[in-house]
Image (tube, rainbow, N blue to C red; front, side, top):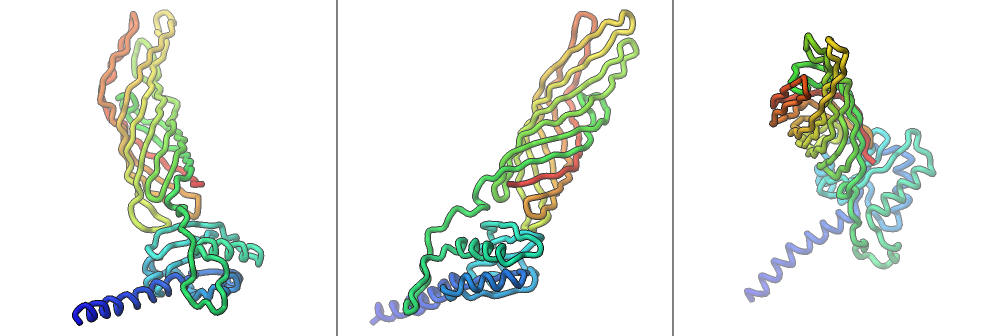
Length: 311
């Protein structure tokens, strides 16, 4: 009798849980959708008897929306993009949603949603069972995607010379969910060196590799702590006043980068501001037969503003 009681208790717990799972598999929440998309989705999903709930605005995070409606799927319209979320609030896919959505585009988006929900062939009218689902594809948020960046800004203390000058940065790399890895170059015109006998100019060409991690859960704003390494190729060139002789010397050193980036994103496009510093831990002496420059270990603060795109 004791085993029978235990079995009945287990069944009593399992049946409601199974029913809830079935309900989630059959429930989709559309947040801020155009009316034409609502009609197309309901028509597309009607054979599977999917419950489609329409919510006017995303006042809560996707996971909370899914919990509120016991839904397994949440689709949110956001600035020309349709974002598709699973029950845990993880963004699995995103699709462009043109302004002034027409019937043909709405039908295509409805097909995307049906595919995303992994619905099998149309169930028989008398089936009545849980809709079968194919194995889940890898979510878009789990795949590495291309990222490109461009920015302009200022760098101070180049070569330890206590000067400020403009810089341009371009980079490309990969991003996946919260993680991004980029490689790029940081270029600028250089800074003047104060030498009464031989005016000269110090120029730096910087190649870098950096990794960042996205903090927070906002869809638009993101804070990214960043760490990386820089390869700094510096050179000094000038003319000796006495005889007009030209001279040039160069050195390459490693630097450690640290930065904090604040970004704003709408769909694949974004804007960002970043402030950081490059620590150059080694000193170097540049010399030729008549000239010597000592470049100390130093820190180069920098700040930039730019744009980026993810594909």
